[in-house]
Image (cartoon, rainbow, N blue to C red; front, side, top):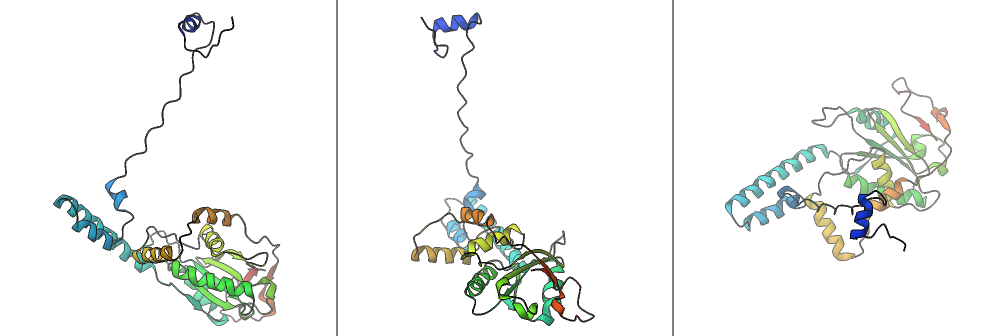
Length: 274
């Protein structure tokens, strides 16, 4: 008679005691239940105005006091964030403004920035009438409003780099601490690009600062959009996939483009990979 060593029987127990069959494997332990959310976790998604309403309906004075304290903390955080939100729109510039508005601006530290990381500046080179450039400009305006800690500037491509071919626009040049840290050319030339793809790429390069919390006006805007459009999608997964697909083009370094520089121009101001 064949013996099934996996059966939990007295006969098998005797065989195991004599080492004839291997010990019975213990079942894996049940996973621990997730920890209960803390009081702060519960309040974290509410705006200050919502916290005020919740506090008014608190079951006792102690809970009301805790909610009021948390609300004041949130207000202080938003005020500190407002000080860092210095931009919020696209600033048009000319070639003569480039050093001041881009290179030098990227060296400016935010208030309270002890690490002295500088300011992220995204320079957008465009040309009117090119569909992919016009579409990218719409995305840039949206991102500038969504990420007011990042400075977005725009300049006509061949006004910034003389003789810049149309095939290279739209173009993005990301500055930090006076240096170029990333460059994207011919965005959308291979296929139509979504704003999530551009947003993901700029997040990966460090040009954008993800908001730590949803601000009240952002939440109200999202609620309004939800009423108009019930379609729900996983934005984070789209952004992760977008970050893996960018324009892969062979880069050629073009310096100066035959333009005579003034004595005040930095060598790095107009040295791009095109």
